[in-house]
Image (cartoon, rainbow, N blue to C red; front, side):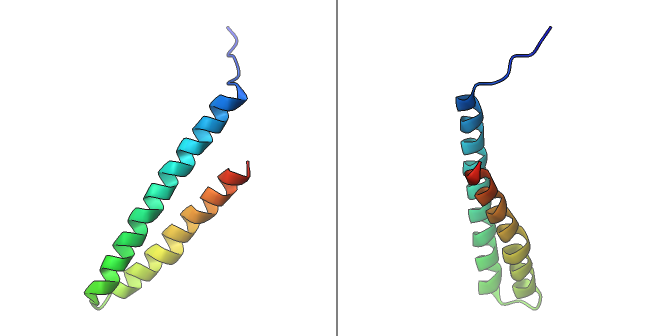
Amino acid sequence: MSRSRPVRTDIRGTLQEAVAHLTALRAMVVVAAAALRAQSGDLDTDVAQVLQRGVAQGITEQIERLRRL
């Protein structure tokens, strides 16, 4: 039994859904980082920086890659 290949619009829709999901995740990370910065605890600003530079930036790069497809 052969598997039929998805049509281009199905792939485009899937990519758009992935971008929307990643965009929402990035927003959550940015909000969490801002909340940590506002708390100004000993490690809060360090954790906020890790979230912003490590997680949010990585998500942004993936969004940009998907949008170029």
